[in-house]
Length: 349
Ligand code: NAD
Image (cartoon, rainbow, N blue to C red; front, side, top):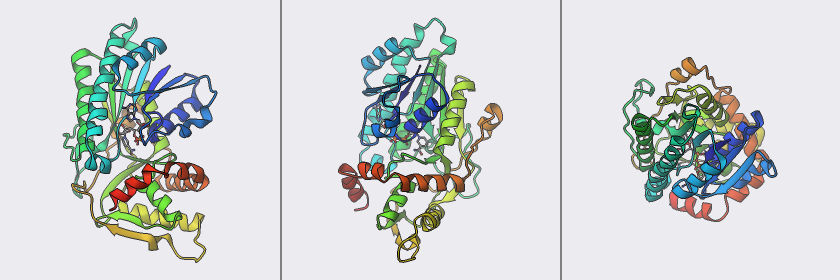
């Protein structure tokens, strides 16, 4: 049994589906079901005895302690977080509570449980983090490797950086077998349409503007979510406690390039009735405050030491992603009702 936190979110739900497609080891999913948590993502597991869902917070120490005593997981994979930079700018409090205080409570519960285990060597605590903790790069700077200094620039990345430091400290001080992964931007199925790629697909097919911040030349490094999941699995299987692993797809693109490519794929897979291109919907909007210019991940360590490689190129991953959104209009409709609309109106006001 493994305990997955935040498993109803974008990456967590992809991870659980992949995990149970490849093994019979049961999964316990602890998720607070914030706006980003969606049990529909895991509807295909209804009735599957290998899957258990618990509605609750990683910040609830007694609950987490009870779950660990009852289910005896051999590992924890911590996805639970507030994850959207723009929301962290509008309201940082939840980011501090979940990403820092929540991570601390989870660590404390894990430490108490781990101390009581007969075979402590086998236990793993895998914390999922981001490349944004490293700050921003200029054109020509080498990509971030595991030795880079932490220089977080947004409340989101600062809260993730704080959690990463706690992870490091719990290994160094108490010996808890913690591993941390720092991954670049993910894209793929079940991605909430507030982030660039699903937002652009959703707006394009709804005939809405495709918003691009500033000049659209910010560079991000993209990885298909299933490749992130395979990397996490690899780190859980073979990574060394106390180590951190950068995960990325060697796929640096400007936001403008990403949006143009999405438009090209949509023009082909879902041509507009009037024959015009989706590119005509692109609209430049005021830049995000403190917007990092460039992120790039050097993934050599996980490739050389753990033999991991991404299976998708950006081109194949983007096609799969567009296809998935076109094939799942009900999912998109359900997640874009109610509070989603209020948020999008506020963000682009
Ligand atoms: P997401 O926002 O889609 O999902 C987060 C999930 O955590 C949701 O299901 C939410 O309900 C749950 N959650 C929030 N607070 C909780 C709490 N207190 N207790 C339990 N569950 C809680 O996020 P995501 O994009 O799937 O990201 C998952 C993790 O991966 C995050 O830690 C994020 O920082 C990290 N990460 C994301 C990316 C990316 O591109 N999305 C890249 C690198 C790292």
